[in-house]
Length: 123
Image (cartoon, rainbow, N blue to C red; front, side, top):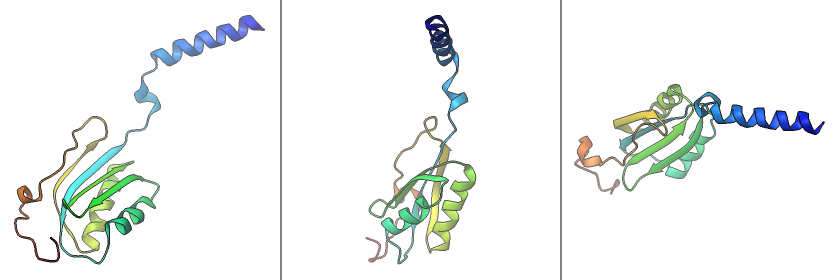
């Protein structure tokens, strides 16, 4: 009995060492962009609405920097997020998306995205 358990543990150790993590893990995607416009929705409301989807793992809406970032399960979920922002009254620009953990995520400067002028309500 002890011999079988030892063989099983050795086999399990060897397999876990040689199996690449990519085979076991599902790719996660990110989407980030700058948003502009006026809406009655708060960042907390937007984040909680989007995170209610099983495909969106993390959602962060920052009204101070006008940056949005989400980690999601597919590129279709990323498309859904940008469509949602448009639906609630925001323009989306400087879109950046990719595979989480592989592609670069950096804050985006709204002034470099053509949003030079802000209304008093947006400041």
